Length: 418
Ligand SMILES: Cc1cc2nc3c(=O)[nH]c(=O)nc-3n(C[C@H](O)[C@H](O)[C@H](O)COP(=O)(O)OP(=O)(O)OC[C@H]3O[C@@H](n4cnc5c(N)ncnc54)[C@H](O)[C@@H]3O)c2cc1C
Ligand SMILES: *[C@@H]1O[C@H](CO)[C@@H](O)[C@H](O)[C@H]1NC(C)=O
Ligand SMILES: *[C@@H]1O[C@H](CO)[C@@H](O)[C@H](O)[C@H]1NC(C)=O
Image 1 (cartoon, protein in one colour):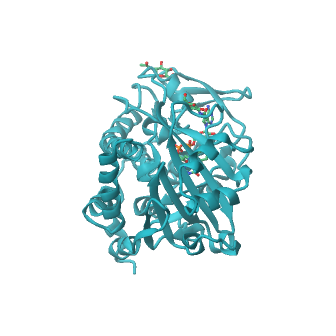
Image 2 (image 1 turned 90 degrees about the horizontal axis):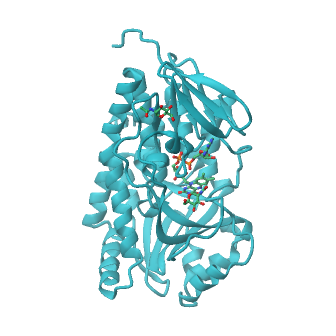
Image 3 (image 1 turned 180 degrees about the vertical axis):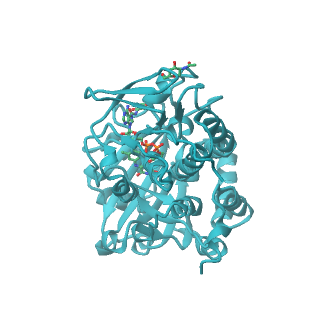
């Protein structure tokens, strides 16, 4: 359909899930001659971060650009809701139902595994130790400058540099910083859970399950990773009026932590959180403040630069969509750049993505309020809501519709394959 228009050269700032997915998506079209990804990190780190749920929309988007990540996934079958004491209250096979309905389920994925799969595709086009410090748009091209002295020119620049985006700061649009949600999170990784003789019955039987409870904030636990390198990931959020004082968002705790003891004190002794906390090596325990970004009225400033992912719509984690929405962004942005001149491509990208990402950020914001409320009635309502979700009730169905059916890649595309 396209008249052979010269496709732009592209600098992607940030080799997170968003930036790297965009790289692979652009590479589907040979017309993109020069595409480079720059990241400030010194190198790929297999122990950075923890895991997340890769939902059907994320899996479909990756598959649509030829990335099959089944080997690095731990598929979820059921959802378990714990009561206050940490005993199983509801358990149902909601995730198997999604799988049979759409052909894609939800799986636990280590962030580092997905980053590695994606970065292998980028090869030498991925440059570590490149921290962006400036962007100058002279209307004919954009000059990017890095802390190490390297400079280059590109037709367009994509800011996929995360919640504290340097690119966002350089654009002359709303410069508001990330908003602190008055909650912090502990995030732990325990390797090889199948070979740990857990005491708690919930922990003895955690394969293929998302286990969730509420007590002091949200407690959640699931396995991630391929069979031979499985890990158990757990997290707990709690109310605070100040984020842990660290300059690295995904910082390791690395020492015994008074905040953790405070959180644990609020759970009865039979709750599984005690055992997972005890079994987590401090090197694999993360502790940080939970921030989000207010939606800006635009993600570009009529220049050759746009934002994507957490740089423009960072969400709180409660809907499990941060990485998945980022992957969707990459697919839509690549399609737009392929079919439209850059200014129209950026407008189109914004129009297609704004409402969807805003709904998700708002949903996560609403859950944040419920999880961290002190009001007994609100907590009762939350318990009813989450119990219904765990049973696959109405709210779950609505959520499933939002996540799967509003995805920019249509699940029906793959249904004839089998
Ligand atoms: C180290 C790390 C670990 C994470 N672990 C998890 C996890 O376990 N579970 C989970 O749910 N979410 C995790 N996240 C968050 C999750 O990946 C994101 O919320 C989501 O995928 C959106 O990603 P993004 O690509 O927009 O931004 P991010 O994933 O935040 O990636 C942004 C990238 O940009 C780079 N960058 C930032 N500033 C500059 C600059 N000036 N110049 C060059 N590069 C720059 C950063 O080094 C980073 O690699 C993690 C994020 C990071 C950075
Ligand atoms: C948009 O931001 C770029 C990058 O900082 C800058 O060079 C350019 O002058 C800005 N354009 C407008 C119209 O503000
Ligand atoms: C991001 O910004 C927030 C708030 O300004 C800060 O608390 C956090 O440490 C920053 N994260 C990184 C990775 O710089």
